Amino acid sequence: MYKAEEQSVPTEDGVKILYGISDENRFYCEFTDSRETAENVAKLLNDNEVEGCHVPEIIEDLFYSG
Image (cartoon, rainbow, N blue to C red; front, side, top):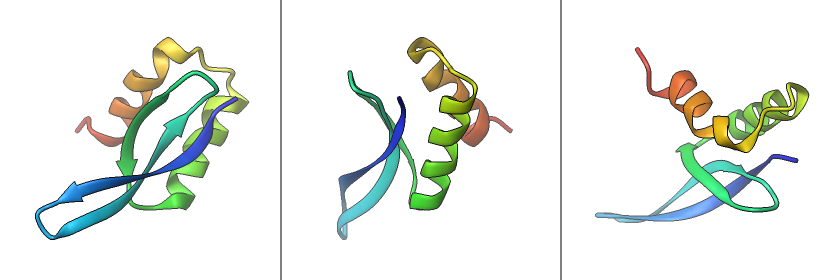
């Protein structure tokens, strides 16, 4: 089951909190500064029973593709 997870990311100005997706085996990547957005993505992945191997490409398509 996927869930939103908070990560502290070092920046030039200190530390920034970003959110990403994790499951019981790993953390995939941080991609937003909005907890709500990360929770919506986790729900989308869970509702569609997405296999872990597809999570990075789905996040890339949703957030990084033009």
